[in-house]
Length: 474
Image 1 (cartoon, rainbow, N blue to C red):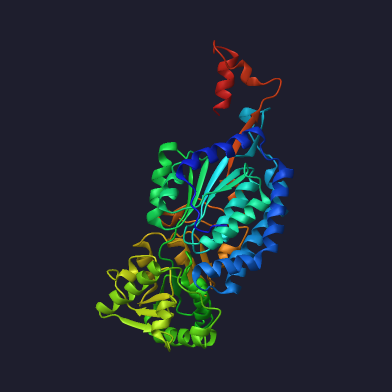
Image 2: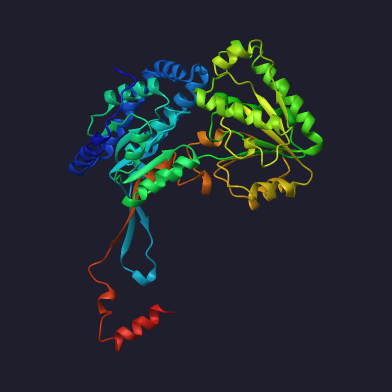
């Protein structure tokens, strides 16, 4: 199979119509949805090593274990959660009608929308393609997937996997670059889910607007990690290192910068240097350190560091490379700190998406809240420390897509809480039941009894109807 294959733009609309016609002819019931999810789980589990190899080939090198965790375990966990709860999610929910509408009854049915378009990212190309796809299937939809063109070998894996599990009238995949993505987003889907940058998210929303297609946007932004005055430094540093260096920092919810008390900055830096050395004693030979996805992103990250140096900022690589030229050709960027950057530095203007960590200090905790609130609302917010008052001040005075206290990343892996951004970091939610609701229409149904008082509420309103109206107004 040609991994460079591109779907012709003129084929997109007919494929969507084929998916919609099949959905209209037979909407998936519980048995079909469960069977689809079971077959997807079985086929995916059997191909985990193949998946990890494909993703690593696209990155130049990616930690196999990180692929198995982030693109393997996460998908399997979500599938297991859906299978365990799908029947309950599909049950109509009874709702009270209140005494004024008695003896009517009401319920809410979560019905499928039709055909969902999923536009996946390059950083976790399997996870963030298959989880939304599977969630939309669980909700009873058909799915058209457009993965990132940056992952051609992974896309081949996804195409083979999906062809094994689903008939083409239930799930289809479109491959190609920006032209295909733009035409894909402009199709009249019943819902679009996009994961990627804020700038592209705006384009997706604009493309969907003429069709009034609802969108779920999972974007990114600059997610802060806050070190409290009482934070156990070694624990905080170890967990921030995991959040920042997992997948080479190419994670939308990675800590993008750290706010640390002024008198603890050096302690933080030394602890992080020690932590990095223990994880990667030989960074260049380590099988656990992921490369930057492509030359363009590598140059972008190097540009942040060049800009910081030109501004006179202290740029501190945490690992000394033996062969800088080979590291550059391999797109290996060592963990690097930038100390006390101002907001004019490029590293503080864009989402970093790499193993660069700016460190900013504060004197009073109010400065932390003010700084976070002066910028776009982040996709993730991390706090380290055990001062309950401080934690509540932060939670009560900021807004973020999701929060971890004394942890990073793992709120994403929790099936029972929603995942999603706010403002510039996104809109809408998915994961578990929240994803099921996102890809459904909450359709209210009111059922009237054979006899009801409302039959009497009609002109002329004098006499008994007028008395009933006055009673209802009490």
